[in-house]
Amino acid sequence: MSRGFGVAARARSFRYALRGLALLAREQPNAWIHLAAAGAACALGLFLDLPRAGWLWIVAAIAGVLVAETLNSALEALADAVHPAPHPLVGQAKDLAAAAVLLAATGAAVIGLLVLGPPLLAWLSSQLAAR
View 1 (cartoon, one colour):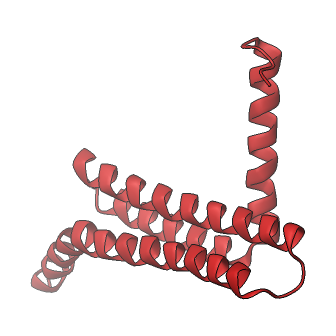
View 2 (cartoon, one colour; view 1 turned 180 degrees about the vertical axis):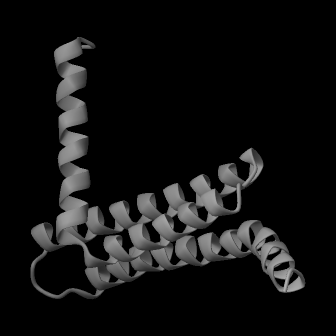
């Protein structure tokens, strides 16, 4: 059912999305781990004066992990509401969603090493050479 394309409908959609982000931050401890890693990657990128292409990879990796974590949390909440009692298929669905987060986080870590590693090593080498 469509509610139209008006400004009020769009504002309502954004309000729902922001409520979801607040829920993710408030209720999901793993989201805090991902946000801390994202903050560390961004701080290091700023310190190293990362070029635009590097930022593209870092931002894409961060977004991928946060999207995966959000979808995992949504699937878990929906599964618990639909089938509160333990069920093998519900367990498999939750495990697969958690695996998606693990894959996204592992990929993000590899991207972080590939993008931030070389300039960090160059900076460390310059600091050691200056001694």
